[in-house]
Amino acid sequence: MRRSAGAALVALVAGMVMAVVAPGAVAAPPDRPMPGDGFHIQFAGTLAVPSGMRVVEVDGADTAAEQVARLAQDGHLVACYMSAGSWEDWRADADAFPAAALGRPLDGWPGERWLDVRSPTVLDLMRERLAVLAAKGCRAVEFDNVDGYANNSGFDLTRYDQIAYDRALAEAARTVGLSPGLKNATDLVPALAPSFDWALNEECVSYRECGAYRPFTRAGKPVFVLEYGDVPFAQVCRVAARFGLSAQVKHLDLDAYARRCPPVRAG
Image (cartoon, rainbow, N blue to C red; front, side, top):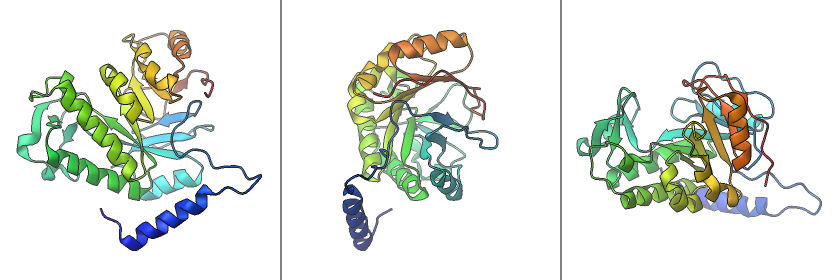
């Protein structure tokens, strides 16, 4: 989705005006997730956001622009989920993906197949998705399934292929004003942390991988951890605090339920 030259000029001027803060005025919070932010993620059931949650993540395709606008009006920074490494047969653009780019099914996830991330068409389609999310009002994006090279994808993907693709995703997100978030892919964190603003991890306590996120935390970037109840809650919080991570226990379907550890200190 291309903006007209006139619209681009208006956006540029508006950005210049907003960058000037009057003496004594309080600057707006950064338009990206920050350490210490309350984080609520929900993909199932009626959306119910507890108080104190600055960042709210929803499914980017399934959430209407009106809902995103309401969240923004309530002071939330809206992060939108997007699977960037898998084809999902229920998405509106499913027919646009070339058959040659569709790989093996994802274990346990009916209707999903790994994508060949070397395909220029795949990256172009992801850029189109990002433009839609930005137009909808999302301000951050969570990229899921960005470690196909380490799975039985059906393609001979290399670590280099994956890193190049993931960096291109982060750059594409920034181009349309979205703060890029890295999902899982712990083996790639050292290479990708400079390109991403924040990270979301599933079960690093359970898998003893939380230490992998030091490149994020040392750079002052937040890491949000979801655990699904396989580890005692006290242990989840203890490990998260040790590594400076923001952790919570959720149901696997990501409904409204959450049991949150005490917040980590910002900075």
